[in-house]
Image (cartoon, rainbow, N blue to C red):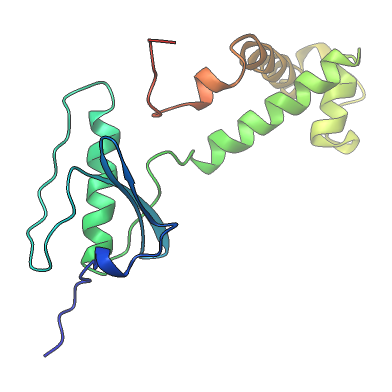
Length: 166
């Protein structure tokens, strides 16, 4: 009976997927429709048990999620969403905020920005000052300005390693 889980054979990885470095071995293992990046202090023998060494640092939660995805891939189970993936609504809101910022930087009024984002048919002829789309547009411009001020990276860099030494 064939095993239902994958067996990773490091000897058969291409040179571009496995390289030796001064600190150990770095491998890119394609499994389950994604690429898993692994660090190995030494190459395992053919019959091996996998042991994970996860540092208790600020990125522990992200590392645990990545380790779980590797385990799920090895077991041929669905991986779920990537740990760094933004939810669709948040992603849409960030896109709208950056588009609103572009309009604001070009000198457009909030009404013009709202028309560009949501369409002219949704903008009320009267009562613009109290229209919900006006408030939403202002909030999107402010979010876009914050993103620009923080250079997008710090807000979008939800889980990547931060190197304080630079």
